[in-house]
Amino acid sequence: MSEIVFDNVWKEYGDQIVLEKISLTIAPRAFVALVGPSGCGKTTFLKMLLGEEAPTQGQITIDGVPLVAEPGPDRGVVFQRYSVFPHLTVLGNVLLGKELRAAPVTARLFGAARRAARDEAMALIAEVGLAGSEDKYPAQLSGGMQQRLALAQALIMRPKVLLLDEPFGALDPGIRADIHVLMKRLWHETELTVVMVTHDMREAFTLGTRVIAFERPRDRPEERERYGALLSRDIDIWPPRIAGAPLSNTPDQDDLVTPLDHGQDDLAPTQGV
Amino acid sequence: MRWINRKPGPGVRTMLMLAPFVLLVLAYGLGSMARLSDNPSDKLLPALGTMVDAINRMAFVPDVRTGEYVLWSDTGASLGRLSIALGLSTLIALVTGMLVGMLPYVRALLAPFIATISMVPPLALLPILFIVLGLGETAKIALIVIGVAPAMIRDLALRVQELPREQITKAETLGASSWQIALRVVLPQILPRLITSLRLQLGPAWLFLIAAEAISADSGLGYRIFLVRRYLSMDVIFPYVAWITLLAVITNFALDRLRIAVFPWSNLEAR
Image (cartoon, rainbow over all chains, first blue to last red):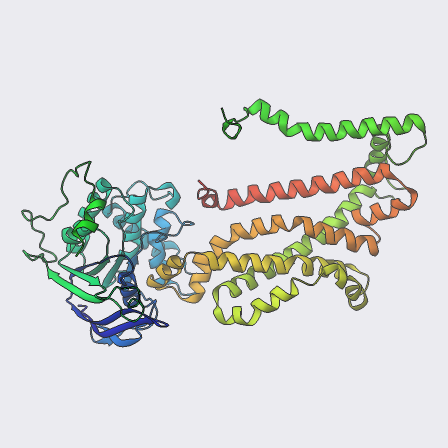
């Protein structure tokens, strides 16, 4: 399993303190949603977990092992943009992880090994609802389909942790609701701990088992540089969602219809934690 | 309707496209006629017919001394030099550009050096090249490579650095090593740009080729132009210039078609 522990983590860029005193334990198979106003360090938090950034102080461990300071195959990621490779087809994008793992020098598979990997990739492509689009390039796909592809591409590595950086932020509400259903199913069916950064409160409460909010308690202009964001709220969703045991009668899904005059994007700031 | 919103139809577009070319030939014809009516032995603006004769003589009648068809042997010599030089430049630019773009250590080592080298005027180096490498093919090819490669290296290195950081990170989370990232993520995305970079360097490459051939050669399009200049043979020079231009235009077009044929995805993104 994969327990992620943040032990008194600080992050500073030069004089600017971004995050302070982050101590946090993320249980295996949790689905953690990170929310907070812009510029409060949500993405920095995710980057540290990804290994792109190292904490200035403190330590991050996964299963007790300190995190190496570069991204690796145990942590998959889906960004809002640029998650898929424009020069590879849908199939090529999903296949890439298998090829990289199996062939260190050529990074390509041939013959029987390729056929086996191809079958697995095709199954995963069908799983995320992209069957029939295998030979298309990402530029020929809609935004929602590209994000489905990015999920499939990350999941073929069977990562322990999946990191999502506002993955569905650029999609319109209908498409977003569809992809939420997919995301939930993948989380139930795969051995995954998910950490998701989102601007969308509704998304956070729809998908998460736990919602964590970052906030700068001292946000006056003269204070802004020397005080970073803290972990201000930590809410466990009730009734608890348990990975692998989908519930049918809880508010597990998006509303079927979003009122036209009250889009989801409008809700987040007014409800701001 | 505003002019920015008016678009020509296909027929008008073709006419507009051809108009400047037709006008140029027309203006030349009129100028030539005016001069020749004053002085029938004028050599500056020979009549189109005289040029056709010259083309015929250069391209389809074997040279009395060597038995060669001069235009074709000149073209072969020039294109041979050009393709070796551009091939070398492309290879150097690809390898160096990727190393500089991808690896911070190589970037720290080479980027300022290449930026400096690319500021040296290549033609100022030509005497040095002739002294050091002799008057043969090597010096000419070296001049083109020195003139063209630094710009291509810098262009490619910048393109590599412009690849979204997310893509590199994504590849890392798929378990890719630096070598695998170079091979499967950076190289395929940089190759279309390499072709475009090569297209942009065709002009400078021809410039350096003609310059080198003008100074020291015994064949080649540049050599011929500068040879017949002594006899004021404008009837040969004009067709040669047009021929060089045509060759460059065809190469430019063919390279772009090649890019779209080999990397179909590289044309999808521009939408």
